[in-house]
Image (cartoon, rainbow, N blue to C red; front, side, top):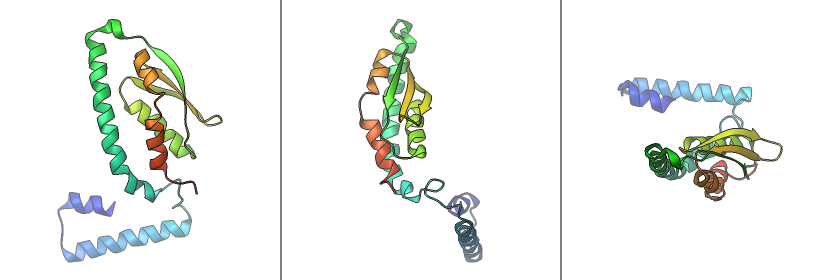
Length: 150
């Protein structure tokens, strides 16, 4: 938050930067002492792995957008399908992230997340969208983003 404030404020005097840094450090120390900085709530390792996955996800979204545009111009191609996708994520946050990645990709929507059997019910605009979820690449990338089990 300190970095965002610094970028948006435009105030780069030594005093303000020092006071802002000390305030951010103080709040972090208080949150740590309160025990609210757990791996589930603030997975810092994700920040290092996120840029690579974000670039890949952006490319997937662009490709899916193009496929959705084809369906929009030719509605006869629409053939809705429901499919259940297995997920290999180890945490609830990882499972939800995978479901969100599926929903972010145009043409697919995560309808239900089943934590018990680690699966996600997905609605696909066409059979091709639904079948594309069988490719384990997105699952593997979300698992890599999630990081090693603690």
